Length: 156
Ligand SMILES: C[S@@+](CC[C@H](N)C(=O)[O-])C[C@H]1O[C@@H](n2cnc3c(N)ncnc32)[C@H](O)[C@@H]1O
Image (cartoon, rainbow, N blue to C red; front, side, top):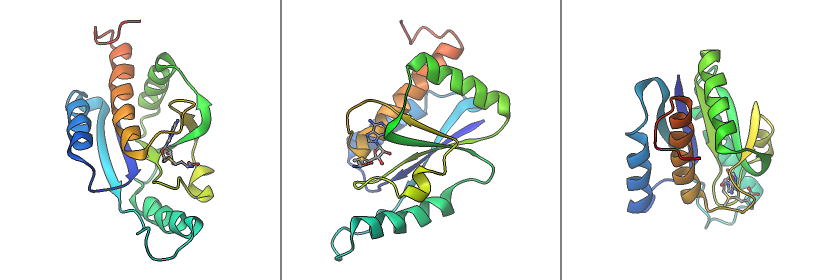
């Protein structure tokens, strides 16, 4: 199984790239995480947020791997614990499908993407900045994987 993280936003600050790499390289081959960055629509050409999110939605659709389980990250999604995320990882592995976890840009995700996921999850009740979301997600995927194999990284 591969976990694709489809994230709106490129040209991230160095700390974001470093943190992502740090967790990505810890993941084992059978649960690897791969980042696909989606170019954000320029914020300076007079378009409405809805128009920008729609343009980004088309790029997200084009980047999504075929037959992958879709997981949308949204602050209004289902609340889960890290132990529950570990259970999701086990289910996803069992399904034999790859997984695409989608993160929106500064304005969020177009409704067509928000409502297209098999699952909609939130990482916190707080509204998080999109660069931080990918870092937090990478750490939580690593932590959740560590739970599935009883790795000592996670201490309950
Ligand atoms: C700055 S937020 C967008 C906020 C926007 N007002 C909205 O309604 O989605 C950018 C992206 O980060 C992700 N995100 C932000 N906070 C989150 C949270 N607490 N849980 C899960 N994902 C979150 C979502 O994918 C969101 O589209």
